[in-house]
Image 1 (cartoon, rainbow, N blue to C red):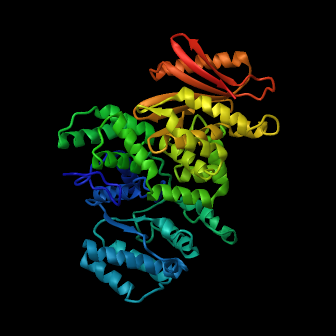
Image 2 (image 1 turned 135 degrees about the vertical axis):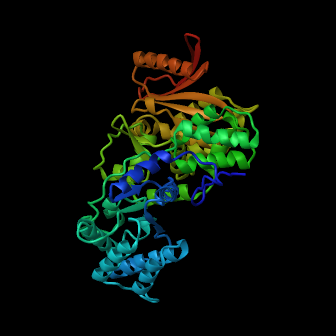
Image 3 (image 1 turned 90 degrees about the vertical axis):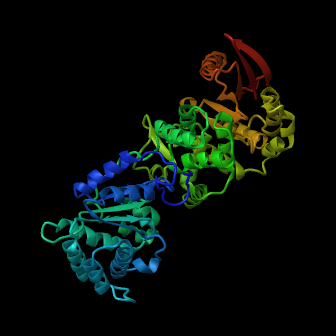
Length: 517
């Protein structure tokens, strides 16, 4: 029976998969046109699986070398001569394992004798020309894990050799198409290089055409995959509802989709809202290569970390500008996406992970430790006593953050302070995310999922009574959308004559619990 897979290449014969024909056909079209291009996406975004499916699709009409630079060392690409030799060695191994013609095997064996570490570019060009001449079909080369080599000067110059061959292909036989796959766009190698290597930014890969096809997994595709699983396991659940829910949390990020399904399956959770939320909680608590890599990137690029922190906590609307270095990096890693010309965290799970990561750096704060100490008094019969939670937050907030000198700090960090208090209370059982449509400098709606129950809390800066009344009406409408009767509001007020406290307000048929701190 098939299973969900989150390690290595996915095979539709043995793994439950969302149909990826759309992106595979788009890539195949570029190959048939003779284009060279890059497939650049974040970690575990389905690049290797896409290349495998692409190779299979092209195999009838092309001789496809589907190779990888995974495991190659820096010395293999230290110079262009090293890079040429390493590339031919990998082709030689692939040819021996995958059954190329005897003539092609003999050519590669002669070109790369045992122990060969360097091949000059002229000899390399001749070998590739002969290889393509010998093949009965046009030759396509796909190179996965190109990041393994891309921060070496030799690799950059090697790309220049391929570029020269591409420009001369009307006179000399060469590859029909070259496809590079990795996280870093070859045109953005400057991001990986030391300052003294900045001259390498002049990319020799400007012959590449853009590959703009979305590779996310759509909600209906997730539902179709679940329909197959449901039939195989003789289960009864709403595949479209669950598929949409998984998409809402993952935005179709392939690893996240598969991992949630894998956890539900392996842990025998129910295929309903509560079961999926349990799987999401388990996912967010585990160590995996995707989250480990995210943490490394935030450490490697401190200004990127500051950008993401300002979005998730500060309520800032950051205009999307491809030429902004940090936004470029965040987009390349699939941390963010563009929506209405603004920079948005790409999915709810990433947003929650970022909250948890940044808050984890502040676990020694008084407000976090207070939440940790008091959490038992807020949970009763599997539900959160949200009124009590907000009431206690107000008391501690006013004790810790005195009015006056701290006003600017609190205005900039009010959301973070509240979430730092909330995190240990729901830790391990519930999660939260901010509604993107209401995120701004003055208002943010937080959605909390806890054991199948949802709670909505509006955090805002106090801007006067009339503004507050408009906020009440907006929150009531928002509760209606979520089919909830009670909502919560926390206002950070810097008026010295403020009256801190908590009260109930009725708006239509909705009850609002409001607190002013």
